[in-house]
Amino acid sequence: MILVTKWFGCFLCVEGRAAKSILFPMDASGISDRLERIRNGEVLDEERRLAEGATRVVDRRLSEFGMVTRFDSSFLRPEDYGFTLDLYREATIELAKRVVKSSIGADVYLGHAVRAYDDLVSTSNMLSERLYEWYSLHFPELQEVLSPEKYVDAIADNGARDVILSSMGTRMDSIGADIDEEDLKSIRDLAEALRSGTSARKGIEGYIDSRMRVVAPNVASVAGPLIGARLMMHAGSLKRLASMPSGTVQLLGAEKAMFRHLKKKTRPPKHGILFQHSLVHTAPAWQRGPIAMALASKVSMAARADAYTQNDISTSLHEQLDARIEEIRKQRRSPPKKAAGKRRKGRR
Image 1 (cartoon, rainbow, N blue to C red):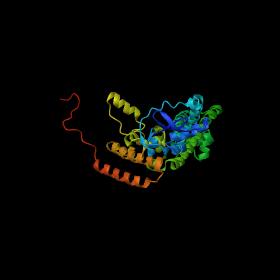
Image 2: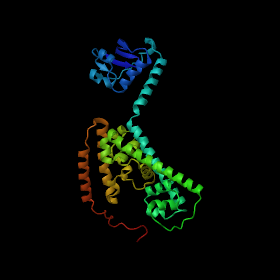
Image 3: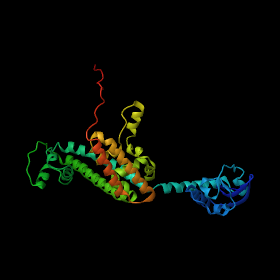
Image 4: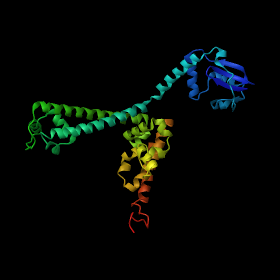
């Protein structure tokens, strides 16, 4: 007896016929419920009830009830049992809606937060450059005495050169030109927009930090919240990041360089997003590749723990990473020597 599950019911088959059957409810919601459970690898109640008489099964999901075998079940037609293809269409549409809803998790929201953060950084840089050039026509010396953040605040809150100097309690000769009130108002509006963008960027950065410590605490600890969220964004989700080998994690964000290497035989990239990590970008050039490889290995392990076990392994990962980096630094104290006998092109 072979246990077969179709979208409209479960069947015990023998010699091209159904000996026993249990049909599913004839409504789209009930069928989609069962299709979703099958998709998740679960065993249906109807299958368990028929499993006692089965010696073989068609679906590997049911291997606990018998040996998996191939079987042509095309003789089991839904119309013979009162089911229609329109009902199947409704059930699969409902199932698709459920799958889409369940696939949108916190890691997807984090991905959009990273994109928003990057957009704000880019916009703030452009606005800041424009503000410096514009306001320097009136008061070029101000950028030498104030930090970038206080520079924007001073223009947004006070505006004119004399008012800013008065608020600072100082005097300064300036080679800047006088400015009309209408021009000054536009500059202050730009400074206010830049200040609002900076505030929004800090807010999103705080959100990424707090959410990463809930969604992927091990990844956040090893790679840092922002870099970890950026890795998840490039991978597509936390589970996709967890399923990647460490070599792929190491090169996430360096896809263009890799394609250029494959197409034009240029030097292969050694790191992608992980270059932003302080352990990598502060290391000497000849150590960055091995350090990025070691870091990617620990990020992969951290992602798997966050995705599947939710165990906190960050302490042991940090210990292993520190030991490996210390080993790399000892092995590669100085840059590698060029191969003996290598000469410059064209030299004889």
